[in-house]
Image (cartoon, rainbow, N blue to C red; front, side):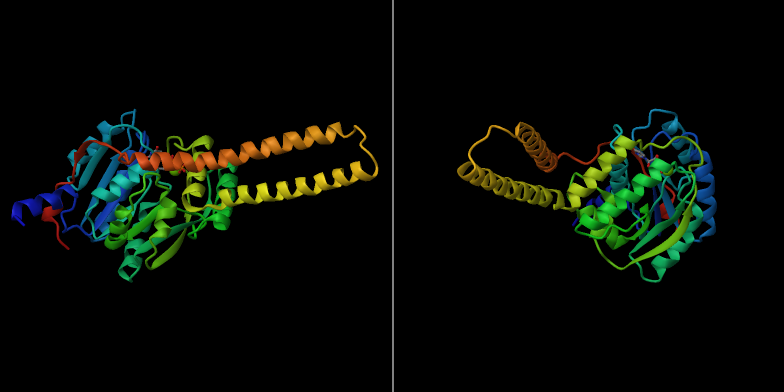
Length: 333
Ligand code: UDP
Ligand code: MG
């Protein structure tokens, strides 16, 4: 192949292969924390003695985040900036970052300092000892409201029971991936990207490091309850057919029950005679079965909706602006 063409294809993949570590940061309206985040992150990375790039994925922020990120990039050429055309959601933003990251290892980290950048050196050394995926497990979630902790616990329990791949409890998106793990993730073609599931689906040697998760440094959570419930639905439907199976079992059980009940009434009518009674029974069973049917159709609908999204084969995100980090070529280990 022509030299310039292959060089071009490397560039568009975002990779100037000399960089050791790419740090992917999905950001959505994080003006309150960005400066502090960049300060702590670059202090850690400079001390870590690796060549690196930081890729900020601006997930359609509507505050001053884009301007701040451009300033950060002007100050530090190891900073890359990607802006998506609108808010596509954190899963899509992470997918964009993973696609553009060129490092031999990639760390995904939240911008709100709930994932302490100071832990990155430990992640790098776990990777150095042979792990392809370094998972960070939260020991406790301080500074998070009770409803968030409760929904999180319920969600992880549910996933543990129904999911086809083990979804580690209390492990968020703060992780390190080796090059081959990132390549594997980039290979996965699905549009519905429940990343916590995909991260464990790829397999590879994984290690887990525990840490105490602090509260948000500033700003507000971007995950209100309804969005979390949506994420939970995505997770369950993407990694489990259990709800469909449950619908089948519910149908079988209620049909079985109904048959037995019908036999009982038939026998009663034959031997005792037909008394016009039992209106409450009639109405209760009618409503119960009606509700059950709607529920099962709803479950079916959730899966059909996902098939619908997948078949359209739309891209996971669209990029508005991409300015890669520029200082990489001069950096070597
Ligand atoms: N985020 C994003 N797109 C979204 C929502 C969130 O890129 O639609 C980013 C957000 O800026 C932050 C990270 O994802 O860096 C985690 O979000 P947040 O802290 O609000 O979630 P929480 O920690 O409350 O679960
Ligand atoms: Mg947070």
